[in-house]
Image 1 (cartoon, one colour):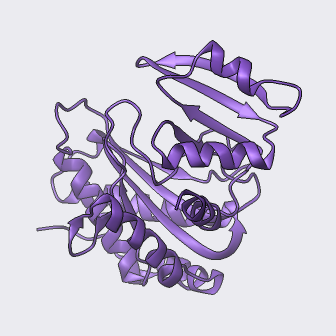
Image 2 (tube, one colour):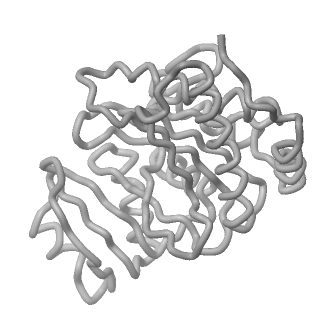
Length: 260
């Protein structure tokens, strides 16, 4: 079962840089470093830090078997693998929505929900159905392409949607300063920020990255995996589709709305 999920993740994120990752885990320490950083694997440690009591490591020069091993650990929920986007082209792009204010409990801030809903609505207007993953403080809205597209094109599309989303929030009386919407990949070759992949529990709060279904709400872990595959098989978009969506973004088709 784990091997099938590993292959599923590798297919969905096929353009992710598999020579590098950020790894987050509670139980790893110097023993872990002694095990993984050896001449046989060739793995290199770019940096290590402890943030929020969670050890974080950036590993590079990963052998394919080492990469697969940590994907398996990610699925087994003993760590989080955060992937780095390719420096030139990618087959996925993401809207990463977080609240700017710390909120107690698992309930998302209202402004975060509003931002996620507006982005989803704008994407659906151009027949793009995002894969909405609950990230903890917000959402990761993944969109998958059938083949890689230049980062500049992806970043331009994302930015245009974000600008309209923030304008809609402001026109509707919501505080756009209470949300942070970041784009992946970036529009240059400096892909220095990583993003957690689907399929594990957050190492700090031990909450699974459930998928938010368009009609059923937050899915169970098993149903999330099933929908993840279904979305990849049926909702991946072509470069031509993205080009058409971009043209609509540039025209009057995408007038900024005022929400009731």
